[in-house]
Image (cartoon, rainbow, N blue to C red; front, side, top):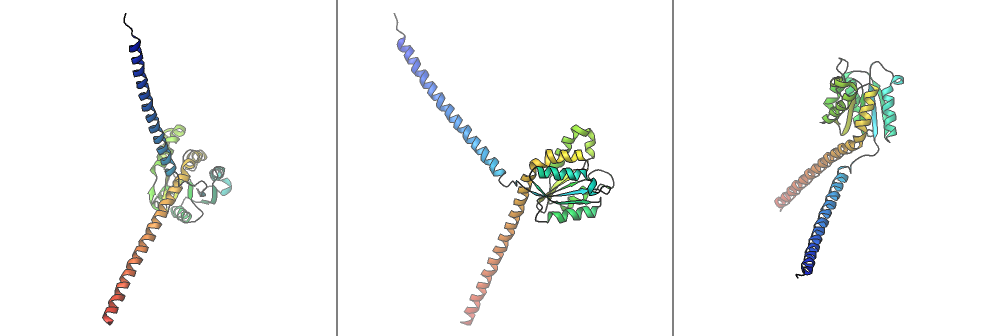
Length: 244
């Protein structure tokens, strides 16, 4: 009679070795996953390290038919921004006038207490709607994704009428500028669903770009100064040689 106990024991040992190898492989796979997760987390933290938690925001209503007492959209912007932890440092109401809109935004982005500008009104297609036309020349960088996202979200509420909206955004003098339509519903959608989730991130990145540009200018000026100093030293040595 043949005894298969040794075969069974041999099979068990082989199975154990296979299990151990599988566990080691799985452990290595888990380590790889952890390393990948840590790397992704570090990348996310690095990408958001310049985010600003609290901003100074300028709110501008563009309308020739409203007064400040009747500015419901401006009131909503102020309240929603403050509820989100930001400070409204400037609030203005100006008429639908190209030069007035452009001059106002240009003045606001140069203020030290303004990290972002939000306008409402003047983004349609009537002859008086001049906000995007007035503000666009101030942009050193356009943010086309803002208008695209706003119109995509607006489609659920107004359908194809969204093609008549020229809501836009860009970076002017290192400051994000957002131009929203004048209706309260549009302002609520644009602010709460698009601007507020990203405004701190965009303002931080825009400021970093401006700081990097300033640092490059300072470095260039320092290098030029060093070069001038070296040339001056050479002239002094030459004069000394001639004197000898």
